[in-house]
Image (cartoon, rainbow, N blue to C red; front, top):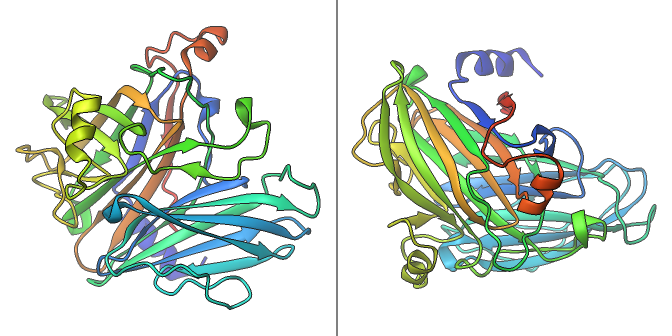
Length: 352
C-alpha cells in the first residue's frame, strides 16, 4: 500500500457497520477465500471492474453470473478458466474472458446490479471445489469518486418452503457529513442458492435471482441522532428490482408491510441517494448519527449490504457485510432464541 492510499483512508472513513445477530460465526468475511463471491457493479455514468484470483496452484473453472436490476433482474452468464495462482480483471463495460476473448455478454449502457462468481470445479478436487477464490471490485463515478471494497463470500442457509425468519438481525450504519459527504448508496443483495445440499455440502454451481416476488427481505428502518433520539422511518423491502419493474406492485402486495421496494436506497434527505433513488428515511434531515435496519421477514437464503458514501466529487468509501439466513430449527438446536440478542460485531472498513 502506498502512502497516498494510506492518507486517503485516514482522511475518509466516516462509515462503520455494527450489527447484532444470534451467532457471530455465521457472518462471512470479505478478506478470506471462498468458493463463491458476490460483487456490485454499476454502468450508470460509472465504470465497474471486478478482480478475481484463484489462490490454488491447480487450475479451476468459474461460473460468472451477471444480474441487471434495471432489466427485470435479467441474468447473463458465462464460464471461464483460471490457471493456478491466476488473477483476472473483468471490465463490465467490455467483458473479456481470461484468455482475452469476448465473453459473449454485452451489458447495456446504464446496467447495474450483482455479479456472482462461483468456482464450479478444479483439477485439484474434481467437482467439490475448495474455497480458493478471493476478489474485489471497483466502481468509478464520472464525477471523480470511486467505491472500492472486497467481494463478499457467500454463506447460504436455505429456507424450507414457506419459512420466514423474523427479528433475527439488526444492522447499525453510522453516518455523518465529514469530508463533505453529500450522497449515499445503501445497496441490498437478496439471493437464493440453487445448488448444493444441506449446509452446502454439495457443490454450489449457481444462485437464483430471477423471481423478485420470492427473493426479498422486509426491514424496519429507524434513525438515531447523536443525542440518541429515535426517529421512526418506515418499512422497506430489498429485492432485485427498481421502480420501473412491472412486477413491483405484485411484489409489494405479496410481501406486505411496506410501500416501497428497491435494490438500493439513500439514507435520508441530508444524505440522499447518488442516483436520486428512494430513501431509507424520507423527510428526515439528521446529518450525523446512525440508521438501524431491523430484519422483520426474510424470504431469501442470504442477504448482503454494500453501503457507500461520497462527496459527489473526488472521495468515496464503501463497506459491506453478508448475513446468511438461519432457519428457525437450526437456531433452536444451537440454543439461540433468534431475538437479535448476541454479540455486537464491528466491521472495519474494507476500503482499499
